[in-house]
Image 1 (cartoon, each protein chain N blue to C red):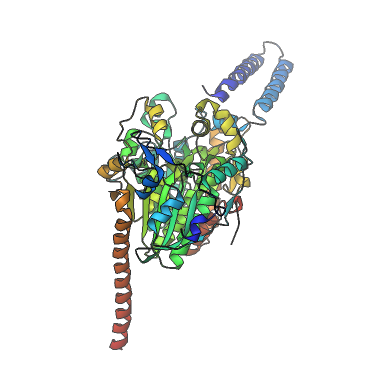
Image 2 (cartoon, chains in turn blue, cyan):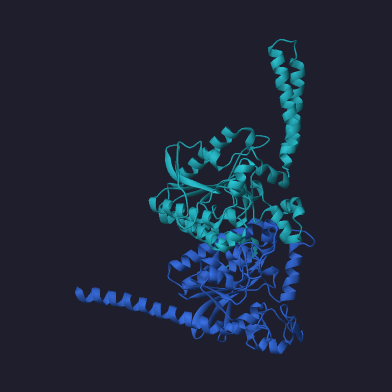
Length: 295
Length: 320
């Protein structure tokens, strides 16, 4: 296991989710955890895609090393929020349970040999909700990708804006959008990979501003949550509603990809973007050369 | 039932009695000046008791008051307004009104969320909840303004974006995200005013701005209090509790630097002097555009970027 995979974890300490058996929430099949991990957390019986931790996701997608950034950006409690528990206690509990300091991990890495700025959200921390830290880390990732002229890939998994940070959470939609406008202005490729679930403040900001939007098979994606819609219209929604496949049919996303094909698909997209970048460099140097010879 | 409307009932009754006594006095049916004075004193006292210090939940109710001035009440006070319709794809969303406008001799593009002023209009305008078609109209008008060099003036008044089946089918997320994008890159001054309720991403879609103004008793929140209570505690009836925690008042948001200017309302709320409030808001908007006119396009966009880049920076520990 590469060193960075143990971040936040004491040496020799097992991951909290290292139970021996996992039950598939879809078909009920009991799966041996090692088999499940070897199958990229896809049920061997019904192909249900389990929600992945950011750590497992990074391990699955990168070539080797991962240089984490903004790990020192940590949450505080701007509203002094208390309900059943104070907000800092909820953060501490999730940090321990998910072995993560916040709901996104960002950094520089290589995928299929291409340099990439990679952000991965984790639903196990506060439901992947976007508060000030998620917004700040992603913004630094977008800015970093722009400075380093790298393509940027973000895996989303989020219940939306984080209620406990109130309007400061909503403002992260504006902040991440601002960073994305500058990233795209410099002709960097931005790919969003929507995983289960992606809703609210995340889907309605940077996720749907991406150049290419990929979704994992059967991921739930939408603006309003299913429960909110059902309460509003007072009827049950069909099972297929708001699935990745539904969005593909409606023309909202570019492709639905099975987790086993995800890395290869991303590498092909990166390859294409890299060709484009090379062509741009060639045409700008030949334009200079042309101007030089004419004089 | 609206809490504020309920509380006003007693006051309206007092108002009626004072007026009756006044007309009786004028008709010289005996001197009733002392009774009138006593009633007026009582009236003032109750007004202060009820509206002097409002809780966040009371402000939510005030923001939703059926008689509170809506976007079209502001538009009708414009020197000129030519409404533009439609998203050029599918339909015209009546929850958004927008078009060419002039106030104080300044031309701009005005865009507002419009709820209904009665049940019939509320149904037609979907209670001010905007569908993707409405957001695409907003984006189109913002882009037009940017290209023409006209300032963008928005009026925010919505519980939130429409959460219906058709809105999901027509990509509500994408429609809102593209509004955020368009407002971020617009090359003209943007002034947003929260005139009633500002609910979640559906409000933010019209509120990325160089100056954000807010009426004193308006609210602006990450989610409607009902929505937040449902998300947090699976119980929408705890909306009052959510409102108390969300820090959604103009005063809280000014403290966080999210709102630049708070515009005063008369005691008892904007609907007690609609014409006066509308005039004051328009004056403040015109003044804000005047301040922003000093910046060139790039400086304006850079300042806007810097403003939103800072949002929440104090709420996360660990800087560069």
